[in-house]
Image (cartoon, rainbow, N blue to C red; front, side, top):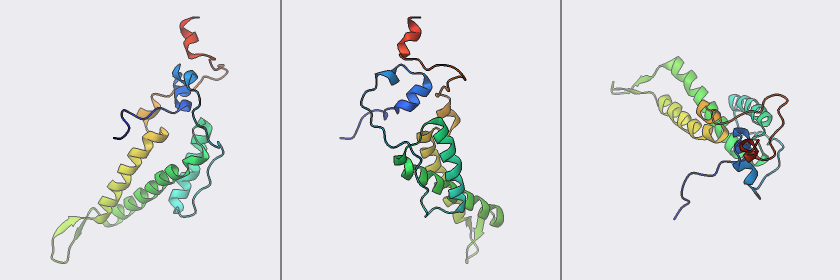
Length: 154
C-alpha cells in the first residue's frame, strides 16, 4: 500500500507561510543549499529558464543541490513548450495528411504534454499564483518569530 494523504509541506515553505508547525519540525533532512549545476543536455531556451529560476528560488531560500533533476524537468518542459509554440505560430494548428484528411498538428500534443508537466512541477516549486498565495514573505526589518505560537500569547 502506498503513502496516504498529501505530501508533507517542506519546512522552508512552512516558515514562509508563518506557520507554527515550522518550529515543531525536528530532524527534517536538509541538503547542500548551493545552487545545482545546469545539466548540459538542456537546450538554449531551457538553459535560459534554468538561470531565471535558479536566481528566483535561491533568493527565496527554496533551492538545494538535490533539486537539480526536478528543476531540469521544469526547464526542459519549458523549452519544449516554447519550441511547440513557435512551430504552431509558423505552421498552424492543423495539417493535411496525404489522403487529404485535416488533423491536429503533432505540435499541439507536444505543447499540451509540456504544459501538463509544467503544471505538475510548478506546484512543487511555488511557480503558480495559487502556490505563492500560501507563502508569506517577512517584511523588511521584521525579526523572525522564535516560536510561531508566541503570537497568541503576546
